[in-house]
View 1 (cartoon, rainbow, N blue to C red):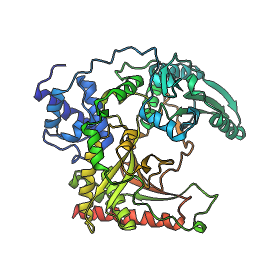
View 2 (view 1 turned 90 degrees about the vertical axis):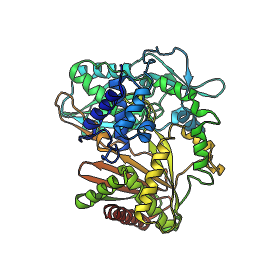
View 3 (view 1 turned 120 degrees about the vertical axis):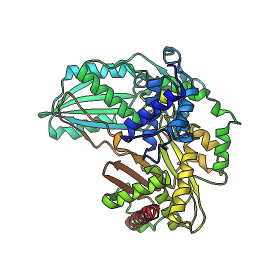
View 4 (view 1 turned 135 degrees about the horizontal axis):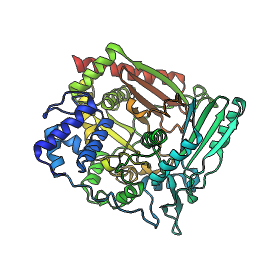
Length: 506
């Protein structure tokens, strides 16, 4: 597509206007308009679709106006590799796949899995089977075998799709046992057993069970999977789409110049985490008598922000040019400082890791851990903490393409690499747009809770964003903490969040 600068700017304005539902001008700042980091990923992906040119999340962070991003779009490379054929031979596992093997010190059959269950009023088994076969064929990650080669290295290989959908009937009383059997049976990853599903008739309703190996699947992959599956079910075919294959990402990651020992990204991480540790700012463990051994894995507390408080938070974010994530991270930073007395705060999170737009509609295991280190002066005001946090988030995301295992290599002290590699504080965000809608030709469908994952961090904070409310959920690992500490952490975060909102709007 031939572009002038004016046309490139107009494309950015059109994409942002539709995405943010705002009137966008050439000099408007994406984040001051209320754009989030997830929306930024969608923006660069849509620009790739309409222009055929490749920008990254780092480009938008560095040039957050249509005028600036239009200049970068004009100079971006055309994507000319989408037509490359699938390799016959094995190719290397990604760094995250390999790190999981090293951490577990076990075979690949113990990789973490993702479970999704959906209850539907009506399903046509024939149409569902055909739709599922199309989706499985399109996404090579769903028919990839993962194994160790003779040298012990993790490898993977695309194999022919061999979908085997199990169609079962059971009673409500027998459903628990069926689900238990579905989730507990061993997986043969070396044979391509990385995705399985069952269609179960329960009385007058249907239950769809999905299991995905985390080695080839992540949260955003589920959005792509559901959109493709429901489209194929309704229309009988998948629309043409130029999404890159999973094997291309794995191959690119192993050959990127970012891995060079003298790369700018690697040197940035060396400076950024010098003298620090992911296991930083920990809360002292509670006495054993308060931890309730044998009880729940974590003590959970929740706070829902609505009305005038939510308006104040959004106004504070806009004033600071901060995303919702950065706004809540500022409150967690401030709470950690108040609870530990340390103004040098390290908070872990997870990034979608899809900064290259050609992978926005690809099924695969892209998501990876990342750490945000924010430093501020003792006694800093909430507004100053928010400003420091916003700078830390933008700078970190611009350097997020270096794989986590490679980030670990650049850190001191060496206990980064020790098992269990636990993180003292962890913040995760779930945007409202991240929950896929199930539509099987109008038949009512209801996603059901899946199975719980591991409780890894000492303190985990989850932000769930909806149009008219933010829900903040705090989990404190019961192996270390009791009920009172969970109450104390939530109170500190709630107090800090209200302080950020108060100063941000004042």
